[in-house]
Length: 306
Image (cartoon, rainbow, N blue to C red; front, side, top):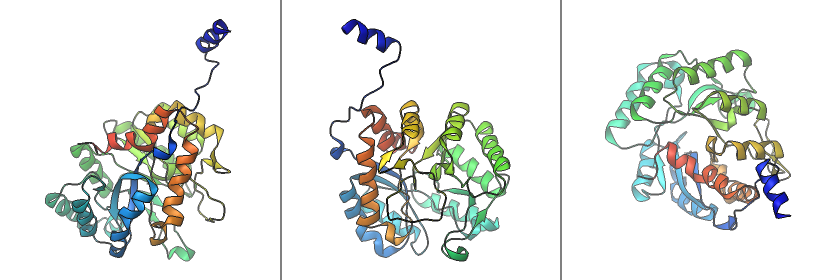
């Protein structure tokens, strides 16, 4: 029997078994979330504690100010890691306000990276009232500026392209791969998994050493409806086998994050529940895989350990 087991192991017939013995003690790094208003500042740490989030990379949006995330970081320097907001009208309008705003912020304080480079963001809500469509080319001045900033500071640059929503899929995919090929010294995490399927995620990973996939909105909980065509890794609250194989094969390329955006996202019902969903489902994977996805990849890419 022992001889048979050794032979099978040598032939690669034995799959890795789950070895994460204490999933309840697993702490996460939320590699990307957004503070929507100042009033939520006092609630965030309580939610992080409830959810078992040891660190969060945070930017501001909507009614929240940059000062709000900096104040949180001052108060909780080992928990809150601020990044510079990039979205908004200056980004879409391609004017001097965009670069001046980033330069002004960077001179005053320490940040850990840049927010999302919105190359294509589909409209959210009826008539786009919740969030408008954003469509910006990688040849634009503002994107080229972000490339230079990421390179100078050795920061990852988060790419936001919702591939299931674009009208010109082939062109935008070519655009992405051109970015990856021409900037191999920069790491590019794709928010929301790029809305891509297993085939394209696997192909991009195999062809590009600098592409990563952020697992925001990649969860589905029964009763939560959305019209957005997110990539979901789940079926009946368990990670699908096809995705499980990719996570095990490429554990260094996937990054846990929630991307809490709206005030309702910062709640027990949404934030805590989703982190716990991931915690429960990831326990089926090997411990070394779980730890890299849950926190080590984010800590490495954004240099959160120093």
